Length: 229
Image (cartoon, rainbow, N blue to C red; front, side):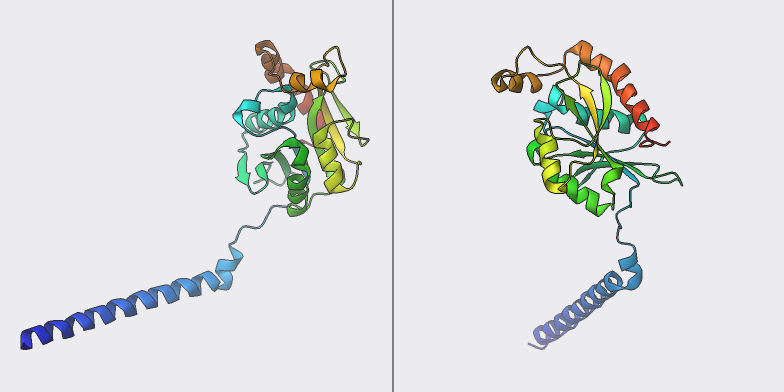
């Protein structure tokens, strides 16, 4: 009987010590989390000087489609400058010159569908404190021959659903666009155009994009001071 009582007594002491040690450890963790030094280490969004935005749809099934040429351009540019596209709440963002004194350039791809991309784009612009005059949207252009790349300053959406969404959320048409030509089928009928823009680039066209056309776009952006490396 005495042995049993002693065992229970010792067990209670050990349990009490364990609870005390756990409580003390948890208290120290909470104090560290709430300390000024811990709060100061929380990641603060980098203020971007410029933001280059690629339009397209999410998912592998859309990856090499004509309509996704804006996203393809962003991926190419990030790879060229050894910048990693990292997942954020709104999509994927890479930052050029992050660890230098040069202007901070954001490369951004959304992961939502193009016709609702304006919301995530407006959130990234606000989060990284980018002025609207310092953004440029890269998108496919039906009205120019495949491979033609040009800048346009402001204007209507010209029927492009991605641009429509951006204009709606930014409440302005006055932003730059980098238009990459994808040709137009011999029809203006939406029934013909829709499957065309959602069709894949040919193997030869993909090669030209990655060896010639995207380089044209990068040179245009350099001349506009949107890329400084």
